[in-house]
Each structure stands twice: as C-alpha cells, then as structure tokens.
Image (cartoon, rainbow, N blue to C red; front, side, top):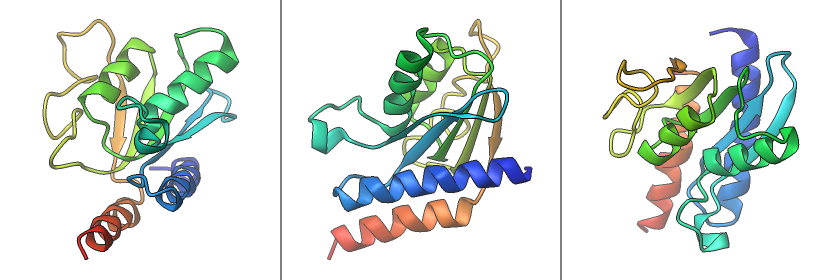
Length: 152
C-alpha cells in the first residue's frame, strides 16, 4: 500500500456514498492512468438504470473507455471498495487493466481472490496485479451498515 492507493480508495468510497444516497448497494470505483491522473468514477447503478450490469466497475470502465476512445485501458489502475464479482473481474481482464486495488473481500460474490481467481490465474491471456485490503475496514463497514439498515 502507498499513499496514492489510500487517496484513490477515498475517491472510490465517496463514489460508494453516492450510490448509497440513491438506495443502491454502496460500491464505488475509480480509474487512474499511469501518470496518476483520474480518468473515470463509477458507482453501482443497477436499480437506478434498471441494468443488472451497471456495477461500479463496469460504469467506470465504460466511462474511461469512452474518454480514452479505446476499450483497452492499458496502464490503468482500478480502485474499487469491494472485491469485484466474476462479471466485473472478467471485464477488467478484457479491458487489459494493469492493476486492481480493492478494499474489502466479498465472501459471497468475490471473483478475484475469494472465488475463481479471475485476473490472476495462468489460464487467461492477461493477468492483473492485485492489491487488496486498502481501507478495508471502512469499505466493509459501509456495506455492513447498508444491509443492516435494509433489514430493519
């Protein structure tokens, strides 16, 4: 972990708060270029957009690809508050993202470390450098509080 990772994870956490305000599961993501410049921010919008693929990472990838003008996002780092699901992890591989930094593991749906190993296994043509646990307690707490409130 470095200071930049923590700073960018705070940007992702801010995006997650935007999702929460909309009643969405509070997951946020941002994409940074190799020079440390912000390209895109995304947050969960599945309910708002009636789109099951509108996860934070996918929203950020779509935005970044449109800005760059290329679906290949080589040289980028994706920061996301929760371990990406299988769909999002696969999209990161297809986008050729260099690095993934996430906050908390997702015991139910995590597709990178918790289940499947998407993005890190030898069987795929592209592997992603993965760093986990950045501001994990804060990321996990946001999710736990959200679901605790929904169960009331």
